[in-house]
Amino acid sequence: MSVYTRADRERWAPEPAKRRGRTAFERDRARVLHSAALRRLAAKTQVADPTDDFLRTRLTHSLECAQVGRELGRSLGCAPDLVETACLAHDIGHPPFGHNGELALDAVAQGCGGFEGNAQSLRILTRLEPKSFAPDGRSVGLNLTRATLDASMKYPWTKSENPKYGVYLDDVEVARWVRQGAPDGRLCFEAQVMDWSDDVAYSVHDLEDALVAGHVRLDQLADSAERRAVCVAAAKLYSDAEIAELEERFAALLREPYWPKTYDGTSATLAGLKNLTSTLIGRFCLAAEEATRAVYGDGALSRYNADLIVPRAQRLECDLLKGITAHYVWSRHEVNRIRQRELITELAALLAEDAPHSLDRVFHAAYLDAVDDADRLRVVIDQVASLTDTSALAWYRRLTA
Image 1 (cartoon, rainbow, N blue to C red):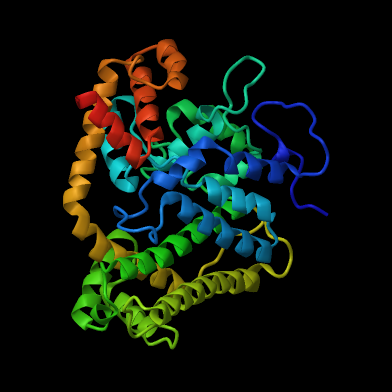
Image 2 (cartoon, rainbow, N blue to C red):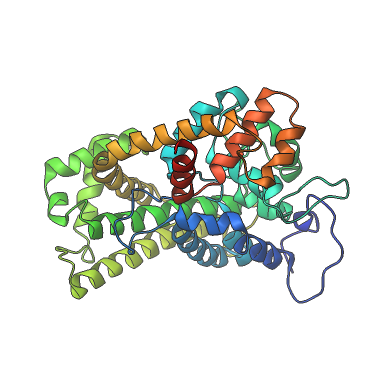
């Protein structure tokens, strides 16, 4: 018997009855998979400017996250299609240049409430992606089910409720509908699975990319001073642990038999890296599965009948892997990061000067219907956020030619 109710499968706007053969969650997966917003992630930065075709983009990261989430969710009794869709959609609101572009757009958008990639994801899924319309003519985006939208939301509250937010004031109505009956301040179980799958996928794969690109060498991590610098970065950005605890965990991780000793670009050492990534993903997911099952038993876990439990050791290891990328990769690209923020800021100003004519046709009506400057600014922000790294550069060059 399904653990998902009829209310979980309801959509924001009513739709005609569908042919039998696919479940509501399978249809949600297809809608996200075929969306233009997901395709654009192929040309949006993951961590740093790609130097070859090995390195991940936001799209390849989302696909890998979806595979991790589907298998972890299935092992815990979730609907696999539901968790996979949430993982596919979790980064769909990221602007050009990733978190760097997010910082720039947030500064530009202060006049309309700020910018946040997770809040933009909800906006795309429920409003901006041109797929479905309500009987009154308003766009409802992909019109996903309540459960899918809930699973896609990492921070289902507004900025006034929590500085780390995922709902704009414009989108409070749909967020309330999604969260109807949900306990205050608590993520549904599938969202927790999605969130951990995201951390697992990007921490492990960004390490692999950093090693292959030459941003970090394995012999550096054998040096205690280098490890301490990584621990400092991890403690500053991700972890609540003391430096000494992180150092101890880091040293233990490097002693694991599957941790490679060298990488020189040969097929054998590249295979060693692949073995490292698959082993770490299995380690992180199995630890969460076993810890969660130890508390909640062997039944199907979903919605609000459980919380995902991740052992502290694996959370710290994940934080350390993210710390490696932060320490070795971000600093290397700081000059580029400054220029990217400047470009996004200038591009938004250029588009605002001649809007709506400067905007894609899909944004014209929203701009003309805007009731005040804040609403008009939000449309310009939506336009910039929809661009890829490549198209943002092209638009900037065209507008400044």
